[in-house]
Length: 414
Image 1 (cartoon, one colour):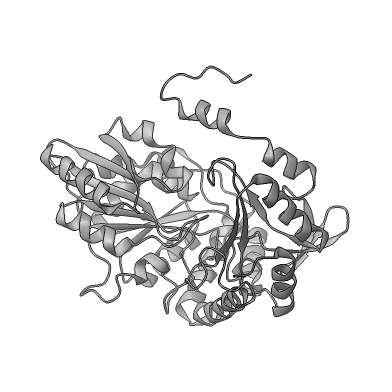
Image 2 (cartoon, helix red, strand yellow):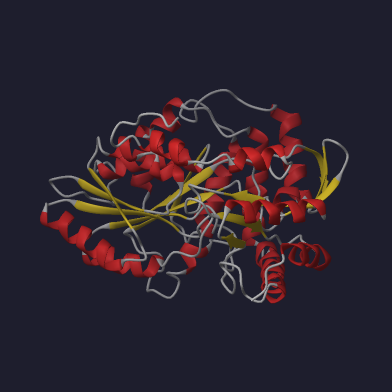
């Protein structure tokens, strides 16, 4: 029987509305796989079987790049797996180098690394909303946080935290009038609006960050972009989707836009996130007061060193060459599916087939699995209740033959 839920308890509501489709997918060996080794985009599963994976979010294949692996191994032997201390007490020299290189990637803005993108949000947003960061003043009556409906769960889960700092509402970016009304209401209330969005959606399309910026700027607000899936895949230095959307503006990235990126996806690290702020004074305050930096542990030392090398590859042109391989593969994927998948024709490495029912999605995942292709089947709350999705992450390392195999078995045409 359904559990009794208290009004406003979104966790309980989500649990009650979720079917057993994911449980069935796991039982049928369609997801939650265990692997022992990999070669390119082929994985060797725990039972010895081989499969082509379209799951990993390492869209450029940097996580297996020889230079990153060597840097991680060298640091592992030199200083060990970890130095268990917050960065405020002691940190490895490669962290300093990584943040300096990231600043160069982002036009000499100031980068600070955290252990995850979620930790970035938890560290930055309370300080931003409280007016602690000098470059981002807040109105006398405080902040009004406006969270886009499809923004990542790591932002959605902070609503209770942010309500301790300011007001919190949600909006749908496909309804710009809705956001315009919310922005106007915030300004009328004497509050500074802070709009929270993704850049490249993990399960959806590309967010119109330029259009949202225009709305925010007109309301004297800030745009906070979680571009975890967009980092590295765009731009001559791999600054990513959101940053490149502002490249044609005088001065590039506007001062009222805060960018957050992941070190664990296309960037090639195994964990970590970062934020790009306007000034050294902002980073000083952030490193003094952000709880995850003060009270949390550091990024694993070998990962920091691998990310340092990745940042160097962003700056020396290697990443730009890998981007060309990635977009060649997405174009092949689109051609073979007749442009019928979501994100077709866009500069997103994610493709998805939507099915009217969970059962249809399970059947499609089963066909792929039987052919030796593993993907991500997704259900509510990732997609609308009762429907299903096959999510496929395309990489620069996929071969044409692997893409042909996957698209043949997916069975989707225009």
